[in-house]
Amino acid sequence: MSEHQQPAVPSRYTLAILLFEGFDLLQVSAAISLFHSLPGKFEILLISENGESVASQQQVVLNADLSYQALMAYDILYVPGGSGIETVTGSEPVVSWLAKQCRHDTLVCSSCLGAALLAQAGLLENHTATTNKQHFNWVTQFGKQVNWRPVARWTQDKRIFTSSGNTACLDMFIAIIAEYLNEETARKLAIALEYLWINDPEDDPFAPLHIVE
Image (cartoon, rainbow, N blue to C red; front, side, top):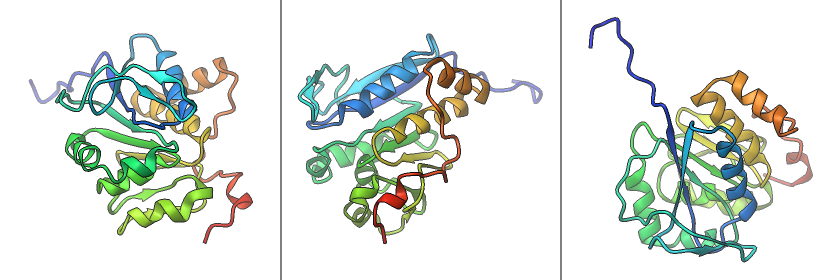
């Protein structure tokens, strides 16, 4: 490669979504819907510990594509929230896999309570992050050197993205799409979905409704 040549841009990026018993269906389906709306740009892979189907918090079952044994490099790794997060934060196989899987150039993101698992795996150390404000004090116990933001719709700190409760993940996903593709594409996608994208991470209209110290 000459000094004037630029590295090739991948024609398609891989998005790995971690599934666990009790994941939140809205947060996973939102990711699938948004990234699938851009044909040919993202390959979506659902991953569970044993590669088996997993039931969501709402008792809807999704089939996994891969297990933890599949040692692949992912461009984006997403951890959703859900009622089962308390169990997986105490699961050594899950925490260990997550810590090992995240390469230097992997974009890691979480929504809602999923930030607790990222923190438990040490992926949020010395980074800014946010989470569900209703459970803010529970989640923040997992990070010792994390700059937890009590007022933030979503956050970006280098290759780490986190979002607040449930639908805030939509704003984060559109921001990630802007990061990988461009902002024009992201805005057009939001318009096509008739969704008002909150692209300012500091615009957190729900934070005042919760008492967060």
